[in-house]
Image 1: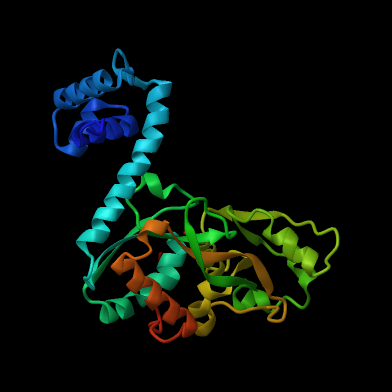
Image 2: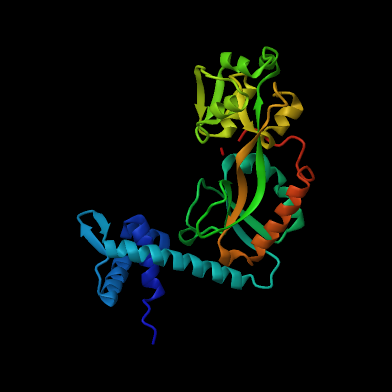
Length: 308
């Protein structure tokens, strides 16, 4: 017989390790604090290893628990993925749990979602905001939109688009600009995720020794877009994020021939075991078609009021 602990005990252990609380683990699993504690005690007895140290009100995992837990979380996530794939085997529909970047989701993906709904009415997409690279073994997510370099350990990456970085501002500010060095007299809007963007732009424009008063710093491109529209300063943004503002004339490019090719790109990331998940296959196919014809299903004026 296989010497494998019960699934009930493993689920109790994994939840307790994440929450560092038997009470919160019980709330997640629909069990009492005492039931979770008993499952942990049974697991410790079966394994012959102490997993948690009860220190008054605190629950501290042992080194053995951390090592064991990192592997168990991945196995449970993989088992869930395989089970979901089996449930939906041969079906057209299903649910796709997708992590998105806030600004990309709000400005590009969500305005196009009605098209996906019409093409795949049996597929439901549940969107979650999540930044940066994470471990698919330890989260209940099927795929993610990734911005950065083509690196994500343990995941397959499919390229979506590269960036074109442009300078934008209101027409009144643009009227005062003749050449790139004129920007040294303007308030330059900055985004936390790209701290060296303006230095790189001035270097590419061969503006030497550029010095300027630091403008406002925002934690998202979305805020930077709204600040630029409000006339707070000059922004440097991926072109696909501001097409509506440019079309409406709220923003203009003072230097339309000075766009830069971004070094980073956007990717669809997913673990290999989800590759044949019907909902993901439908989404990948639709996404590919959208990128080949990016204006096909985009509404003329998506709501601009919503973070890369």
